[in-house]
Picture 1 (cartoon, rainbow, N blue to C red):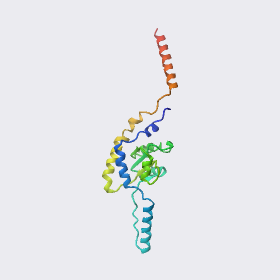
Picture 2: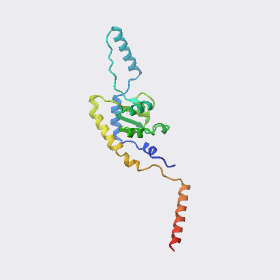
Picture 3: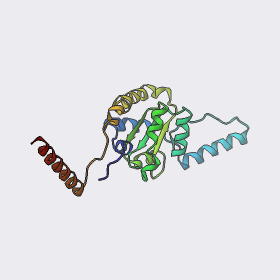
Picture 4: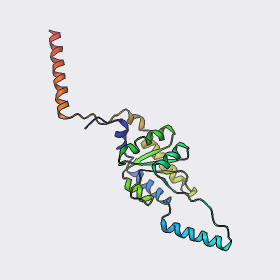
Length: 193
C-alpha cells in the first residue's frame, strides 16, 4: 500500500456509530419532496390561483445536496452542518470538503454510505448533504447532534491530523530498509572498534 496523505486517511475515519442513526432520523424529517408531492403542490397552487386566492408561498426547509450547491452554501456561511459520504468515487471530488468546512468553521461529519445519503434526497447516491436551518421543534435534537459531532469528530481532528495514514511498505521495500539498517549497524560496529 502506498503511503497516503492525511485527507485520504481521514476520509475513511467515519463518525461514531450512534451519531448517524440520530442524524439520519433528523435528516429524514427534512427530506425534499418527491415528484408526486411536487405535482400535488403545484396542482393546489394552480387551483388557488384559478380561484383568485393567494397561494401559500412559504419556503420549505429541506436538506440541500450536490457538491456544487453544498460548497456554495459553505462558502456563503449558510451551512449549519455538512454530512459527507465516506465512499465517494473518485475520492478527489470530496476530499477537499473537510478542509473547506474547517476553514469556514462549519461542523461536518463523514458517514458510511453514499447510498444512505442518496436515499434521503430521492437519488441513488449523494456524496454530500447540508442543513441550513431547522424547525423550532427540532432545535434541541439538532443542537445535541451538533455537539456530539463537534466533540467526537471535529475536535479530535487535530490529534488525528498528526496520525498519518498508510506507511505500510511492500515486501521488497521492507527487505531494502532491513538491509540498509544491517549495513548501518555493521558500519557503526566497525567505528566502535
